[in-house]
Image 1 (cartoon, rainbow, N blue to C red):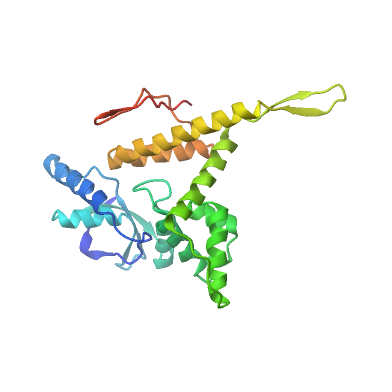
Image 2: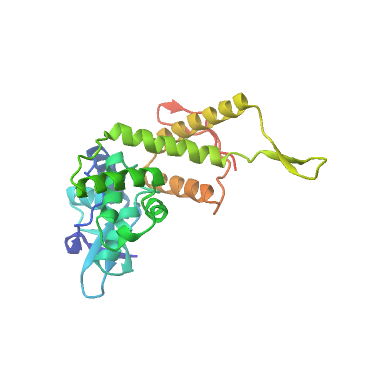
Length: 264
């Protein structure tokens, strides 16, 4: 980690559609608190350098902008070696697991940055979806709209709310797939048969889990930005089978109590 001047960072690779003023205000408050204790507590921004004095900012646009507004001249940076394309590729997938939650427009822009590139557009749909942190169905939808434009057809319009609904539908599928697999039993004929729970019970469990997920997202958005990074990384690792979500006491948010607890 290195402390670098904000003035030398090239900030042309923002993968979001726009900056979020409310989030900037939150970060400014943290910068003011940090000034009081004499150290920076926010995660370092990520920059790529070619070793020749050029630094491309790949992750941390809100942090840098809010720091400037507070008169801060230097920020902690995590340096990675690479060129501008390396930085752009990193920026496209930077916020899928941490930081300010992306809008449907942000996700769409990330997909378009890959599909409009000669090299990255040759990736499989699965690879594009994984890098952008979206569903393959959403990638297919955006690709289809691009193809319609290329052939001179009027692309099918979709609102941001429709895109959000599509992503929520994908989240529902992910949660359902994460539920325990049906038990099996070996019949007299030697074949294995699945023992499925009653459909109404399974639907009830799914609705309950989805409600908990929505409450969880709401709680995460209420956390300190630094804590949001840690929580989202922990959850993503657990979903990908790379770790477990620790048992926690009921979470309390300012002015609000929640009975939601995550079990390993």
